[in-house]
Image 1 (cartoon, rainbow, N blue to C red):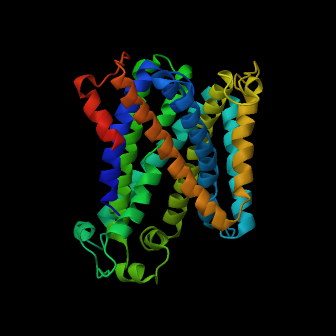
Image 2: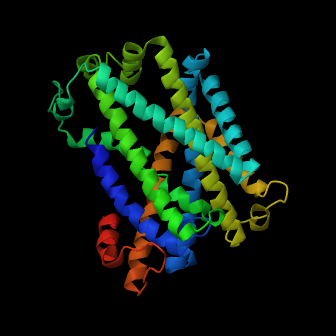
Image 3: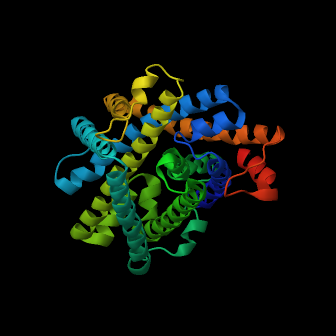
Length: 366
């Protein structure tokens, strides 16, 4: 699992560089939708935007649904019950909608708070585990600890890659709020780079910390320990430390839901403003009171709320769709950039890849 992190991180770095180049020239609200539109036209834009919109809306539900697993032990209720999962998820979705309806300044404050606590807490927990709970050596990431080889490792490795694949997107959302940023042609590419870089570093630190602190790999492999992360927290952090870790996780999920809903709102608004979706005029209407499009905010809250009520087995498939949908949207933009270059497009924003553009674009597509 650990080695899926640098692999996926490298691939996403290539994609991020392409997005940074495109967003620098086209810093327009709506991100992926607008990039595709300006690169090769409205048909590809509608398809990529439609897939990406649904993926984001479903991702809001996918992020909100697991919160009860961590909020339950933190606040003293059984978070594994169906009703607890639904109610907790709805609270998170409504909270995100309220923050987004307040406007960009309050959104920025919540985002700074969430990211700050999440990064400091994640790195802090990872470093603490590495320094004080060194049950296993760092060489653990090179060993199998008796896991059978009869089935081969390819399937297991691909499954483990879902961990990194689920984490390393979100940098593209910087482009969704481009029209609300000063000097976006320079700042949006930088924000994308920092998002992926800091997220990657924090993930490596926490994953290494958890790995070296696993009490018994044998029990994890056999299935006797069904919650390795929980076992690490209980053994290493005690009651008070576990509460702190759970609080960091809950805050991380909440801030993530706020950010994804913010991106989805801008995307829906952009779709409506360009007249490419039914009810576009209402979706694109910005009210003087909120300086936000309230109908677009409502859509990005109501649709995820409906998804939350679906059965657990369906939810698993929906989460899978969210990841596949995000990456399909990515792929369409990267492909659009290749087609645009072949037609003679020359990036003209503040950030360009120069002579490396073709190579990075093709590798990103692969």
